[in-house]
Image 1 (spheres, each protein chain N blue to C red):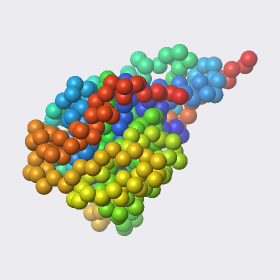
Image 2 (cartoon, each protein chain N blue to C red):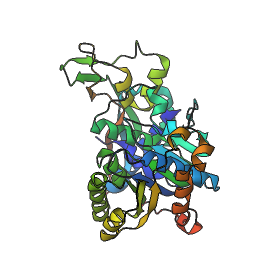
Image 3 (cartoon, each protein chain N blue to C red):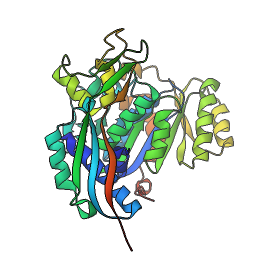
Length: 135
Length: 254
């Protein structure tokens, strides 16, 4: 249910953008979802549907899932994150704090914990599409 | 691209009356022990207290406070467990005793993540055990958490104050309130730290003499509070934190 906290953050950030930009109505919120955090998509979407209100109420939620791509800072190896091989508690830990991946994941080539998450870390808003206020 | 996490931090901390960052800039001066025993004293005096270990690469407050096997609960976010009267939060819940070797930007991301999802509820005090250095966590704290008060710890050493002095200068420049400076591990009477602190226009709160019995009481809550260190710390803070006047609510959103 940690997905609720992330959904609240998305709604709070979107509300701030809408307020500042003077959008009258939001048509859609485009969200990126990185695989590393292993967010439960159904719970996340349900939480968003419950939390949207005001000018965001009728916004269409579009979620683009992104594979997590990691790059070793030592040997330059690039690979895609896979939760296979991680036990349940390690997967859960990475779900709550994606940076904890550095405690459990190693470069497949040189075994280093010093890698960069090039893409697909957590949750972000790609853009918000709406109508500008006319008056 | 918008990072949504920073937009919810004020909401998460809105019912926290005081955020106290126990800080130094220098490592090994006793921040964790001061922060931990301070939090215990406040909790024993009836305040609602939270404790957040912000040392993401080398956390140790869980050892001082003998946290055991408790885990946070998931309730539309993360609710830190209540242990020895404190709502305790640390990355150790997730690192499973393994080294969490994070670079600066990763530490920053982990800090923002936990600020965004941790539900502290109503607290009189949230004590932050700051990492050494004046780096990412300090800068993120100044950026994302409003109205933090800093409690600074130094040792009598000129080497420690070399960095502590710079932290004090930075906090003055950024207009962040400093409660005062505690001189820890004093081994002989000296006014050098007091004079340096006062010359910079900050309050020297007092000295904690080196306590050889402290180490053997690590993890023993009653033992810690009954050490000379615990008793002296209580004397230093009682006019600051154990008065209701200090509990004026933090201003958020201004």
